View 1 (tube, each protein chain N blue to C red):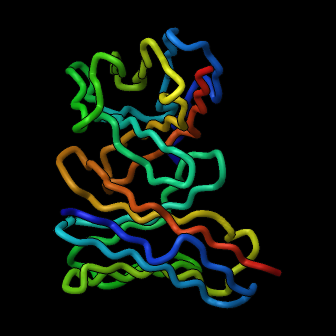
View 2: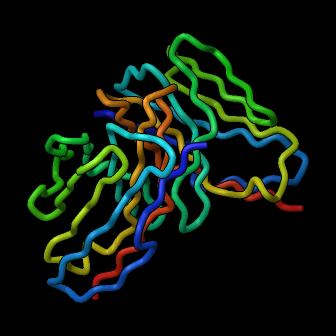
View 3: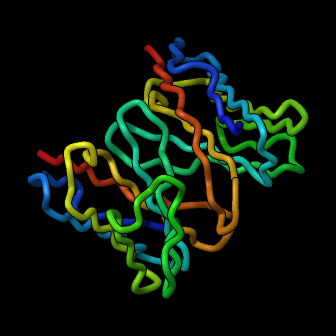
Length: 115
Length: 112
């Protein structure tokens, strides 16, 4: 089946620094990738839709200058959390649309802790 | 306003019984609905998709129904096992590019 990886799986950083999270589709090409955030015991909240070669589409309330998304190729999308603060601590999950059956394949997630 | 509700936060059942999880939604007209399984600290794993013109879908011990009049989907796990213990999320197609909106999830615990 289709596999999506994320790197790193967890990261701890100091307040004010930037953190980059990578999302890769390993055995398929994904024209569309999605970035979600999940707080404990909460639902996955869609942050943005990332299309290869074009600007990401952000959901209402998500700051595009704070959460920079780059979808440079059909197998890689990156999310950079700029000037991270403790309230950005969360579980960040990406998914990729393989283009068939409307199924999304999710990565294993990245746990971000900002001190 | 648009809402997706999963009827309880937790469901505890005995091994071998059928687990039934409910997903209700308001002010959506999804073309399809999906169910995912999520284990602690992991990303969701796709289980089943059911389209608006389908009443029922099965996959091994799993069964999903979709009632667009009631705006409800039921997810059944028959002959449940402790390994089925996880959080189950329903997700509705809510936009272009296969955009999904997720419910909060129901945590199922199957005791031996």
